[in-house]
Amino acid sequence: DAGVIQSPRHEVTEMGQEVTLRCKPISGHDYLFWYRQTMMRGLELLIYFNNNVPIDDSGMPEDRFSAKMPNASFSTLKIQPSEPRDSAVYFCASSLTGRGYEQYFGPGTRLTVT
Amino acid sequence: GDSVTQMEGPVTLSEEAFLTINCTYTATGYPSLFWYVQYPGEGLQLLLKATKADDKGSNKGFEATYRKETTSFHLEKGSVQVSDSAVYFCALSDPGKDTGRRALTFGSGTRLQVQP
Image 1 (tube, one colour):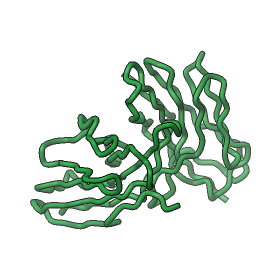
Image 2 (tube, rainbow over the protein chains, first blue to last red):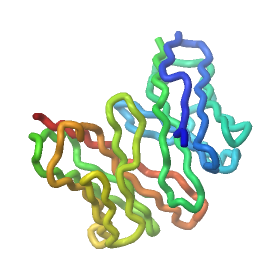
Image 3 (cartoon, rainbow over the protein chains, first blue to last red):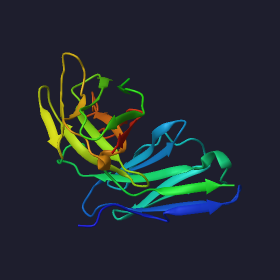
Image 4 (tube, rainbow over the protein chains, first blue to last red):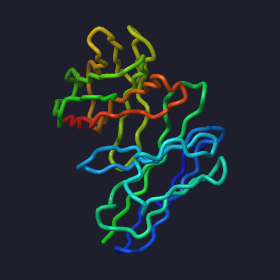
């Protein structure tokens, strides 16, 4: 069974550009999470969805960040406009109700904003 | 609110040494506890878990016991290998009053370096 898939794996962009990160959760999972990892702040939860509906977006840093989940098999995290301080590794994770609270992580997208 | 505190790293050990990484937590309810491992350039992988007091999670020679009285979930391994070099994260899930809440609270991570 395929794990969580993220694309792209690496993204380098210039300040002010729009960036879109993509995630495909494990088939059948009903929760999807977006995290950001930096050396300074560690692993931060940005937002999570249940059955495609955003449940908690309190971790989204500011209005430049937005996330959508148009269907059960796809989610995007968009940054517009991007800034150098957004440079980080962004992880997507998914989980399944009734299987405990464990989450399964994708390989991450390393974003560099110059 | 909920929090997880891990020992600061890096932890540097020789191969076959005994490993302990300390983890303590605060939670309002009855959390489930997890250890995740992150190898260089990869995402986090679930290593082991425990869902109630006195449960012992184990996997790949690692183990951790859920100690409610000391609010701890220390990770141990009897004999580490070079391939165990990674960052280890302790985490909890505590729905509290909101039984639908699924977010995990992570510790800051502990880097383990095993030397041959």
